[in-house]
Length: 194
Image 1 (cartoon, rainbow, N blue to C red):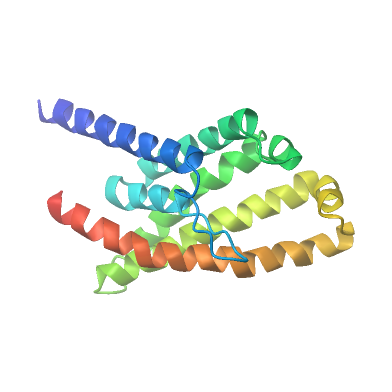
Image 2: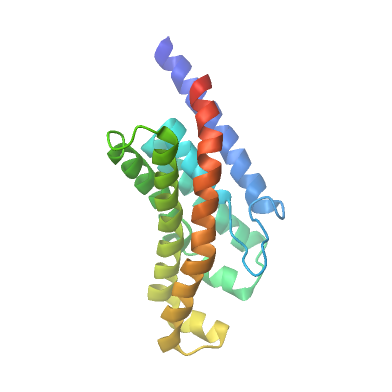
């Protein structure tokens, strides 16, 4: 009976998280914080929270759900021709999002005996999970569509890596800091209730 109750609870949580991801992706300004000139996303926070509350496997599943939702958004509501090129590829849209759950869970587990303060552990794991998404999305874009992406940005392919490193240093760092602040604030009360 207890196993069935836990399974029902897990499915309910996954449903709620999926609904949150859909809202964050399709409702303008709910998945991003428009801080000119940056536009950091906060959608990865949902995946990180899922990982720290439900475990690594479920975090990876929620990350995969986000990736599929991103592909659907690129197909149904492209904001540029690059959306169709980049975000319909599951290697770019799904794999980095699954890796958020994996790296967040692994780092958090690795830090269990390193620090006494759980908030610090969650913040460090959040930074790693966030940067995992940014770095792997940009790496896969560079490896798979480097020439096309460079042409769309009107830069030489030899300069594309410098531009992508700049994106990691600006948006990527902003997203990681956002995750490090928000995730402990969200997860700590949920863990107390749980």
